Image: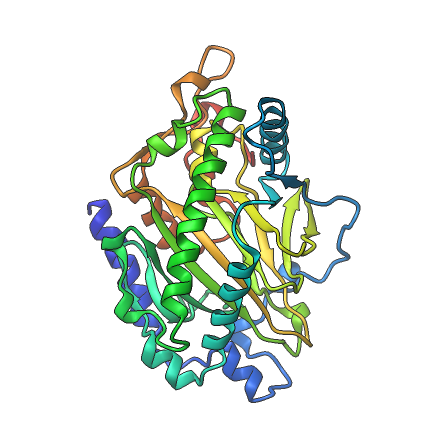
Length: 371
């Protein structure tokens, strides 16, 4: 079966499963359930209930002053170091108006405040270009999958041909205008960050952006209601992102955790900042120099939490592999080259857990447990 057909079959399988009558977690919260349904309960050895590590934190990188050569060199070094060690960092002075960030959070909250019937009517789950779009539950691949304590709205932002605005929220009325503005700002920021990340590898500043052509920008708004037994569930299971680069806007409620050296660290929300993380495809292009870190979301008993996540995905026919400038006798190729569409097929058609998708591409002679 060719990658396009396999990808479509994986999406349709998930779409069929989403028609089954399993309550969404926002509905469970509104019913004030006292116990978590069995489909959401993790095996005891996978529950996020251990003591959290707080000794380390993500780098907070100030992007102001990039036009100054010395300051740009400093910022490039900071981003490269964070991408090698953590695969995550936070940015301030990123150029996106804080008023727009507040508007994005506001229209998103307004949508999730609608009734279940209205959310489903405005944004039915459907098979989009490379992913499921709409409002509901995602990554429900089989009856063996433990469900995450999260509902989500997902759709494409750009390019124009990928957008199905007729399935975007109609309420609030400013949703489309707000997200189109935010999408433009995020694309500008991502192009800037890809330039800095390229320079951090010793490549030309336009290397990454030229490689991935007219990229697809996806948004996923994750909504985590309070949970009566948060130590038994994942808000979002441990995974790395299957894209090039991710930009996350949070609502000020902590819940994102990043894995480093076998320990989980909570990302502290910083007002006005954005969280940036390296995707699997950028790890491949960097030949493993940059890492796409595992991360997860945890929930609590008291507060709703919302995260607005933007994913940058190459066009389906783009070949993803290590930059030739990074390969020599001392630094052999670590991963097989793969078409972006084929990687997306693997990522979407299996239980997204840990870094199994990217690790499967390790070349046999250098295969290792983790990178």
